[in-house]
Length: 314
Image 1 (cartoon, rainbow, N blue to C red):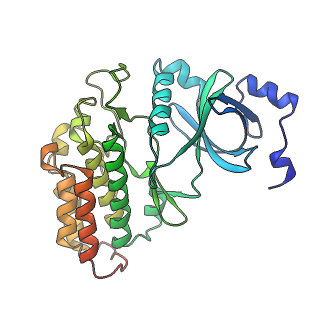
Image 2 (image 1 turned 90 degrees about the vertical axis):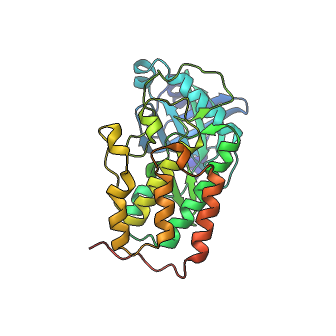
């Protein structure tokens, strides 16, 4: 690191911080339970409907972090944006698992909440799939580790509700990490009224039928298994799912969108059965738990003779 990268903020930079500036090069002073920490914004990594994520330098520890904060527009446009953000911080603060992105600090700056996460040097799963380099063995191994991470959060009363490729990071060791708990539900909390009844929560292409029906607070971990099943199909076939236009589109979805293609690709029948079961319309017909799914994926890996690259579809 150059000396300039770790210098203390100037008076002018501190004034920009207090004004809530999020300009690149600005140094933000976060005040929280761990005292005051300074982060220098280096690059914007992503932007959603509510939050913005920057690559930032922790000035004191000289390490890179991913710094997430609410945009001013989100605060004004969504009346519950701050409450959702705080819930995400509470959830992440409780979780420690090798396949989950870890929170390292949280606080406020310029009147807005921020939190810092470990920076994952790698790509999101969308980009990995687009590169067309995944083998069947790698796809199953990624899914197995994510199932173990889901089992862990489900044991802690958390339902992610937005399992999809863009929320899965693949680091340089090819380890998957589940990220973005902005839509997660904590069953241990009272209903804060953050989701209106009848509102679908999640990304429709990866949502379970019960989520699409608007029963978001009634869903359990099996909704996450549905999303992971779609993700597994995407990894194996490199075909992204269609966006359902009605509940009827979700019935028989696996057979309609993926079964024939997997057969042409000579995907083993036991893997096809796993994909179909995770994407069943009725939650009670899916795997009972993420742990059960992880074990089934482990058995499929044992039966797989080699990790040869998947044949392209005809």
